[in-house]
Every structure is written in structure tokens, then in C-alpha cells.
Image (cartoon, rainbow, N blue to C red; front, top):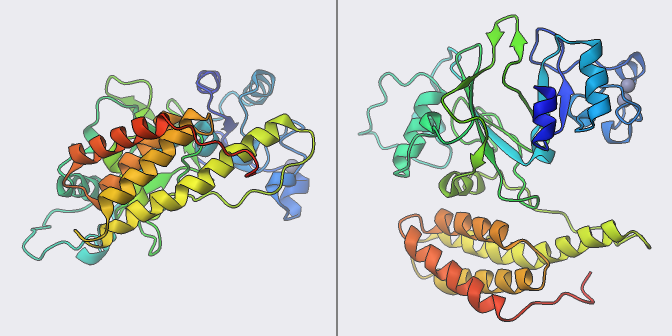
Length: 340
Ligand SMILES: [Zn+2]
Ligand SMILES: [Zn+2]
């Protein structure tokens, strides 16, 4: 399974045999606290610091699981381009209805009798949005956990779309009660991993993650899961790869504020200049894509999600504004030369 995951382009790291937590650190890493990103161990082939050690390198993978065949497999979600909706079914006291779906008031008339787990809150969220319940999504990889939970795996639209992790009980960033989000800075247990409680088993026909549905993308944006890229450091002289990343970042710096303005239109149902703002963002994205600064499909997915966030009742209209804007902008390539 480790090799199969790596073949999908997903970096993997070993879990402690029989457990769902990462294999332990070496003695040096256990005793001293330090920044995992600068620790020499992962590069030297030691599986310290959990997902920070994750790799797609065949030799390292063969060495790790050769030494410890019973070790489970963790997948580093961020670099794998994955976002996993982790539905829990732990017995727990149900909180007040205001805390079940953060940001969505649940009317007193909605009968919540029988609501007991993340399966119920996720179904409620989908129902609120008029969308199918992701827990029943046969089109994507779903993994049943030994504790009766479910991992629903999705692909993010591209390398610049990054979501942060959350737990469903967090007062700051959460999707729904008893629903965690595994993304940047987190890992997910791969199917076929065995723990003392049982096996992580694929459920349903799909063996691969599907693209993240636009409405879930929008929900992740609405609930604060989107990671906005920091202003990049100046390029180091010489490195072509570095220059390329910085160019991508420059395009992000142009586009992200425009997309944020679209999202902010959600504060009121009208009078916010939504159409104009969405058109401007799409036109700019089209120009940046035509000049090779960003990937058109990824930008389109992001615009769709932002528009859905602000104007969920007019999905088709949003799509038309975006596609028209992308086409119009595409005829006018937006060059960023001299704007590192
Ligand atoms: Zn170490
Ligand atoms: Zn270390």
C-alpha cells in the first residue's frame, strides 16, 4: 500500500505497528525539541517527525517497510494534494445546536432528535446546501475506520489551493461537529492499515479520490480552511525552480485579493457589486492563465467555490460569469514581468 500510494504521487510515512499514530522519533529527536523542517533525520532516511518525513522515494519506502512490515501507512495530505473529510462516530454528548454547523444557525423547528455523530452533521450540512451527502459519495475513495468512522478522500484542484486541518470541535475553524478536515500539515491513515482495533477498509467501488466538489470547496472557504499564501521572499539568484515558484506566487498575490472580494459579497444578498467583482476576478485569472502564470482549471475551481460561497442560489449564473470572464481575460494575456 505504501508503494501504491507513492505511485499516486502521495508522500507516505510509516505508522507505529498496530497504531494509527506515526512511528516514533529517533532518540536524538525525542530528547530535543527542534523544527522538524530543518531536522536532518528525514533526509537521512529516518522516519522522525511523522508526516514531515513522508516521501515518494522508492528506496526509502522499501527500507522503512522492509524493516517494519507491520507498520501502517500515513499519507501527508498537503503535498499529496488531498483533502480528507474525517467523519467520527465517537459517543459524545451532543452540543448546543448553534455549535453543530459553525456559521449556520439551525432553526428551532428543525428536529435534531437522534443526531449522534459526524455522519448526522455532515448529512445536515449537505441537506442545507441541497447537495448529496459526501458519506454516500460512490464516486470517490472512502475508507471505513475501525472505530466506525469514515474518511472521504478528495483531490484539491491544484498545488496552489491549500486547506488547513481542523477538528470538528474547534471553536475557531471547523466544518461540522464530529467532522475533522485533514489537509495541509496533517496526514491520513491509508486503506489496508491494520491497528489493534481493526483494518481501515475501502468502502464502495471507487479506488481513487475524486475532485473536491465545488460546494464542499465553498464550505471549506466559508469556514476558514483556505490557506492564503504568504508574501514570498525575494528570489535567490540563479535558481530557476525558485523563480518559477515566485512567479506563481506573484500571480496569487494579484488574484487572491480579488477572490476574497467575491467571498466578502456573501455578507449581503445584494448591493455588493458581486457580478462586477466576480467578472473582474475571472477576467484577471483568464489573463494570468493565458500568460502562463497560473493553471486555468485550478483558478476556475477556486472562482466557482468563492462565487458559490457568496451566491449559493445561482450556481449556473456564477459559472457563466466565470467562464465569460476567463474567455475575455484569456484574449488579453496578463504579463507579470517586473513584478516579482
Ligand atoms: Zn531523528
Ligand atoms: Zn528531528
